[in-house]
Length: 77
Image 1 (spheres, rainbow, N blue to C red):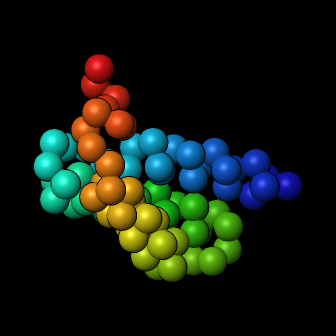
Image 2 (image 1 turned 90 degrees about the vertical axis):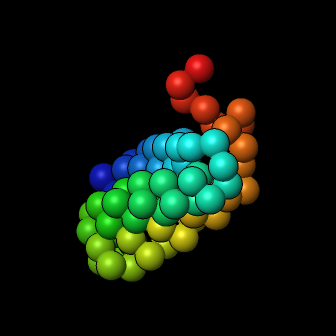
Image 3 (image 1 turned 60 degrees about the vertical axis):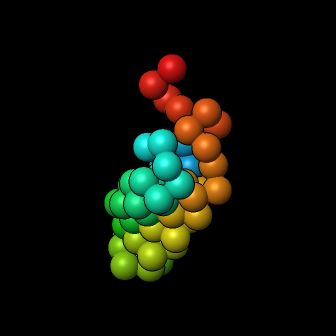
């Protein structure tokens, strides 16, 4: 039951915080790092394992960071 509640909330947080920076390269690197950290936590909680979670989260964060501009997900404004 707890996994069902935590999974969407964690995914939303990872996507929202997935990229910081102004250039696509900076956003991809920071998104990958944040996604890997969040993915490791989610993976450990959901049972897929922290390594697999880090790989999935890191890939998703890097892709999201590279595909967005700083105006789309700028939490500083």
